[in-house]
Length: 424
Image (cartoon, rainbow, N blue to C red; front, side, top):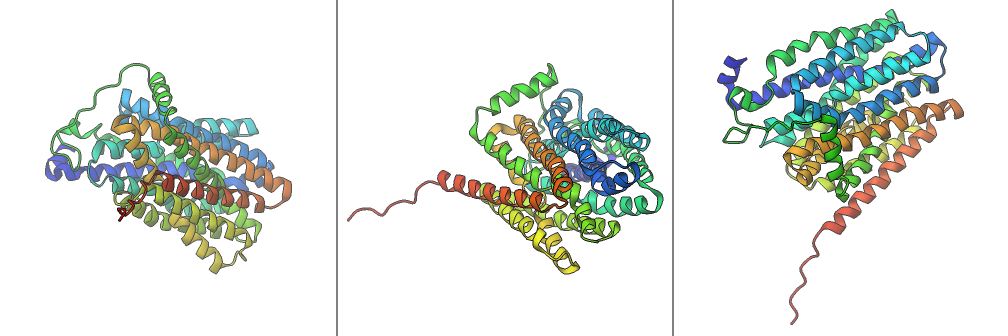
């Protein structure tokens, strides 16, 4: 690694981005399992969709709740130790799902253990790495890392869907477990703790920057940062909007899109391909969002992103679910899927600084995953009660539009008044 570092200099930061991209991609594979395996498990074990969705919602909630504690653990014990531990836990929890025989066991494996593992490798990891390694082009780096979530879908969904169809859902689970173990060397051999560990300044900086160890209890540190952030109105606005983000993305579409398509007669592999195609568009959209967040007003960007996403969700239940209209939805929604992350991270960092920013974003991300958990369970419950996903899509769509209006209103209030012409 040191020879590669010496040859590339500060450009080695992009090697780190590539390595973390791979780790986040595998984590995304673990999180994409419920969307692919929901119907096969329902058929195999005879559980209703609300029961399975409850386990999924626990995992999604923990995925968000782990964010601030994951950052605190990385600051205290080191990024590499924490991520290797998370990969091992992901492999164990996913492999254990193949042995479940009761709903509580699914809650334990898919919910508790998998949620902790994937939550440790959430977008807070992207924010932490971008914060440590970049002073210039941070938005672009963060956009690339964030896009790994949907790239993971692009890679894993078709494979998992095909495996579940021809070899069973348990075989699909074992694929994710094996890949999680296989990528551990990527962290061990390519990712230093921080640029100064290999004698480099961050990309765009001219001098070494050494981060002081926080010391103390990581849990106490995480709550101490929350206490400071909770006194700032911007924190609640970002956390509230991110709740809606989770409500309208991985909780609803990420978990239930394949089941929704099957309700309208689409085969599982075809539906998984559609969801994977959204990942391809999201790779473009989120990377572009990172580039835009370096150049334009981030409140305005968030307003546009939430508004356009809401319109796409309101369109979906009234479409014909044919290939043309689903392709339009996949492109439009996919470009916007996680585009909200780079502006949100930037706004959090501007308000709370380079050190506390990732931890604050971890708490904001908790709001995201609580929203996702509500949608994962709520959509399953509504589908069981009304035999339709219509109401879940309408709630998410209108919530996005309302959030966009609030963000635009905040932007209008914060702008200084236009100068008035001098009298006479």
